Length: 278
Figure 1 (cartoon, rainbow, N blue to C red):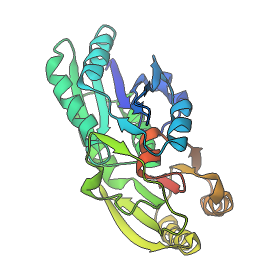
Figure 2: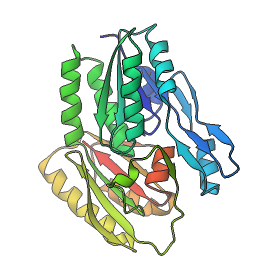
Figure 3: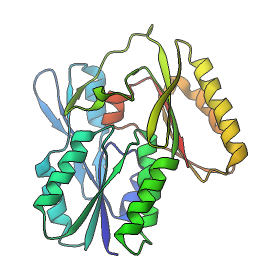
């Protein structure tokens, strides 16, 4: 199969894999409090996010807008010149508008076979999902195999996120634009677990020590029952010692540190820990 993969930049995946698996990203748009717009720069198989991250860190009134239907039509049409089929991977949970835009654009482009794959992953788990599915796509014989693998992968990825966003699993995520909330240092942290396509709240505390302890306990149980093959993680700098301790419990497994995306910055926040594995 001569297949390209389209993602939106909410997927936290290393750009080193873009050319290897024919991955093409679509970026987001930030509108700051001065009503100026800043577009996430994308070239073929590359994306630049750091400048926009610095803007939203300083401007709590900045809004984030999703890639448009037009953006999808343009990239689908462009890739139709080189590839026989497209797999477009997006999250109907974290970025439902993006997912819906991809579905609409698919109907508008007839030059190529397009399948829109759904996932409920967010943050590092979204990158892990894209990498694992991309590896499968590179050797798959038909689209039915890919669809089955995507469903299975979405169910079996496991993820933990420590965040101050208590609404990580709610309908509050389902919007066309996002605005960051400034987090008080007195606000509690929340621990969520992703498994079988669901984000479930586990516990909350103003002290993250107990939340990391919960993660360590659960990792100990998991690693006793299965061998992990791939780990993705991301974190703010104030959790460096906790991150080191957590990773130390995962030996003989590939670990990839990924950078936060614009979507993660809005939904997970800038004081967080995020780890995913399969």
